[in-house]
Length: 75
Image (tube, rainbow, N blue to C red; front, side, top):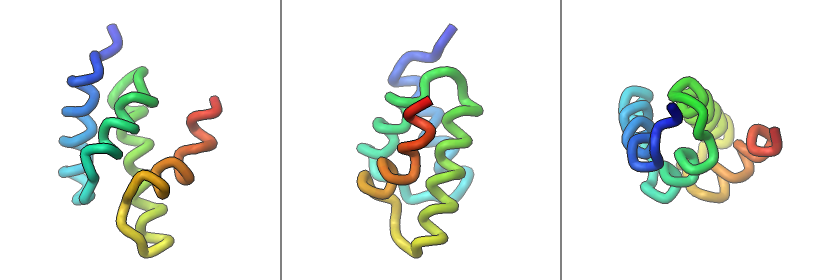
């Protein structure tokens, strides 16, 4: 079974904490709402956000999340 939205938001928050990410609630909801298959998918999206944040030397916000994850969302 696919985890419900609330569970995915919680998983996203725990993964973000483990990765040391400062993740606004709106970004957690964005990721949890778009990546619904399993926790590995959520983890991959967050790791990509972490890499982009470091590469651009910018905090993670909605524009960065949308830009960084756009190609994954098309599939």
